[in-house]
Length: 248
Ligand SMILES: Nc1ncnc2c1ncn2[C@@H]1O[C@H](COP(=O)(O)OP(=O)(O)OP(=O)(O)O)[C@@H](O)[C@H]1O
Ligand SMILES: [Mg+2]
Image (cartoon, rainbow, N blue to C red):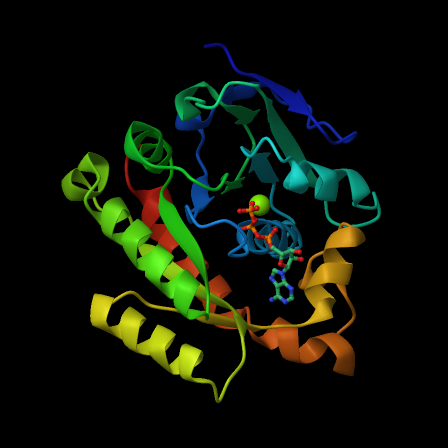
């Protein structure tokens, strides 16, 4: 099936679109088969943080719900540019090697759809360098995410060539049993969780405005949430150096 990316951003880089396999970029897949875990929230925030570094950032919306596409459309042109690609496909499966992004892309972030498994999951992982898994701190989500992480680690591509994985603990209410259980679960899997995001309307309003939490002035309202991303951004920076120095 031919997947035609439609550009959702008016600001188009001057360079050509190439297969994401040909990019000299760090390709980050934000994924969890569980719906509503925070994939789009994490993907859009990461895109905003990375674009703010002044490096070409591309956000691929691979979900037919097109929430990330909507975020790119709402993003004001005065903010650091995020180049949006929406996969214009009605079919359930899309082959990620067919996806295209500007050649100058340095950071590629893919917002995945819920429910990915089997060969589709394997293909997606194969075309990315780092995996970021948002998990909600609730018992239902921990159980569903445990199943998903189990499947992910057993995919042929992960067994053959394991990609670094981190979890973003999302909508965390500290001092709760669910948060304790999520931490125990992640420690037992030996998966780092460098970001813990609290449950706050700040993320909801940022999304509506086409912003990431890092696009706001570091006033009282957002400073605390901005701090929550620091370790994850440092982790990405460190891993991206390893990705860029390895032969693609
Ligand atoms: N930390 C947070 N605090 C408050 N609300 C949040 C937070 N993270 C996400 N949300 C809200 O939860 C809902 C689901 O989040 P999001 O759309 O990012 O999840 P998703 O994994 O992309 O969902 P889907 O599987 O449907 O694509 C959204 O309304 C979002 O605004
Ligand atoms: Mg989503």
